[in-house]
Image (cartoon, rainbow, N blue to C red):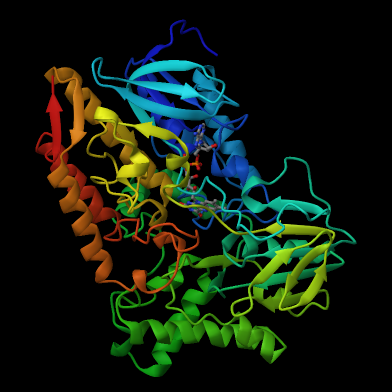
Length: 536
Ligand SMILES: Cc1cc2nc3c(=O)[nH]c(=O)nc-3n(C[C@H](O)[C@H](O)[C@H](O)COP(=O)(O)OP(=O)(O)OC[C@H]3O[C@@H](n4cnc5c(N)ncnc54)[C@H](O)[C@@H]3O)c2cc1C
């Protein structure tokens, strides 16, 4: 730890992923004392925990990086079009070293509770070890995908083989060679890791509840000329990306045309171009894929045909064909995913109608059939958006618990503040673009908003800021109404909390796009934080 001797700080930050690190940098640059608490023993958050084979970013490297420091973005050289986890972790570590952030971060420290002291207008943060610090402002940079979801199968603890969760992957390499491996789940982490595990496992059995759409990454070494071109005018590239719906993809063609405005041949040709381009841009091939079910089904059928053309066994191919709206669950990006099912050592088991019954000492049981494994991998995702926040016992003004306030689902103002919780900010909270965006872009926007706001409070003599109840209710209504005009809420996704039994179903991210969201935040700022109650 650094030189700060007292246990009182201007700002306490929970989490040392990209959000917590940038918040710390801003705090220090603005002359505030700050402390960060981090459960892990290093920075990086997502990229510290998710070390499973094949873990990789779905947003291109030149876009998935901080923009706050011009020299940093000139100096850092990415090696691949889509960076892999080790490289992104090295980047986070480099940023921590370069800006001397580690001195202010308490690693291996879980925050257990945060409670607002009404009489003193400050937050008391308690760690799992019982230490306390006090801070005027608390920033929750706890991450949207940082609380792993481990399903409550019967017998989960009786399995005697090796067991891993993709989101809590060990730091030492895991050896699959010669082993019978079972993997549960077919979301993004599974889709990235299955082709690699299948290369060395004796046999890999994949248990699929819901088939997901995956688009090839066409990953490879970064195109140096392209990277140099971006670096020659990085600010312009960043600005153009901020005008994009999800904060990335400015250099990729997108169309506002309807699927129905072009001939069958042109439609196929356009889908094919986006398929060959690879990555998440596929869903921007036409402008109506996110709003019109018939348009969406045409895109979905294009992907299903690709699956059928890739997978040799027609029955396996059909099982791998998703039937939900494309995009209402997170679209995945892969390298050789569908092709892997042509290998003799890979089996797909459908657990949609006959779920996994229980785990046993030697494996698991589905539909009265026993499967024996040396290793089981849980690729079962996260208690998204609210999981990590609600693991902290957060108590606001007059003893109100965040867990009680959110019992029927999260409510926030702009995904940044909550009524009843003064001087508490969330980065990428529910009600903000968060997981539907290039998250580094939206993290920087949130952190900048928070610090501009803190500067305003300081210069205007205010000591507290709190979302107004009416503003919060109106924001929740606005978020729901925008989501209702899209196809997003049509399937059981983690965006809705549907992957965690008992979790209230609320569409959590803001779906109006980053440009709209940013302009709303700007309006709020220029109207002296309209919708927030400020007090001295
Ligand atoms: C496998 C995977 C792939 C992804 N790919 C992309 C992508 O392609 N593009 C994209 O934009 N986003 C992607 N994301 C989302 C990714 O989470 C964000 O891009 C970004 O890294 C989030 O940063 P963060 O700092 O907000 O949260 P995190 O990186 O999750 O960091 C939060 C930190 O808070 C810590 N923490 C939480 N609770 C406590 C507590 N009580 N006490 C102490 N510490 C605590 C956690 O340990 C964690 O280190 C991906 C996520 C995953 C899991």
